[in-house]
Image 1: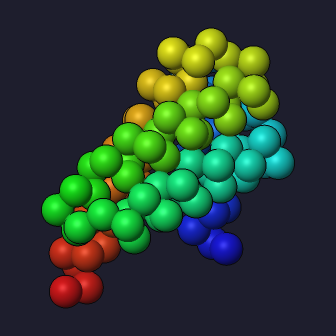
Image 2 (image 1 turned 90 degrees about the horizontal axis):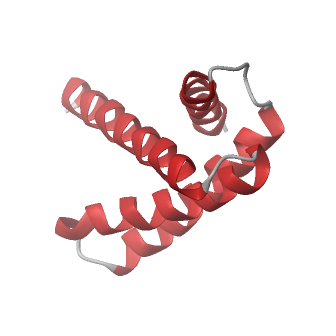
Image 3 (image 1 turned 90 degrees about the vertical axis):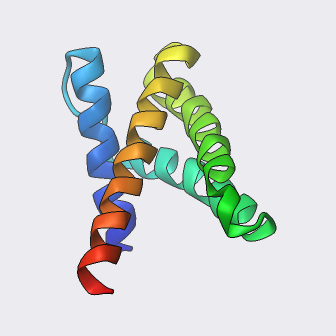
Length: 101
């Protein structure tokens, strides 16, 4: 649950910076994080571990459509925001993995 809230905060900050506005709202951001995270997790289970980047791409596209629907951004800009979000999540995960391994 904490990961979803932190992910929503990160994604909201990315969108606020891209749109030069204020935070889009917690409800919309949680929906967008779940819309990107669930398909990415499903694809990640189905593919071998070396192909994790495919799951990230699928998650970014799904989150991009959700961001476009909830925040009124164009699909191209929302997919860019989702890709930045997934890149940030990957870096954070790798840092925690390195710290606790």
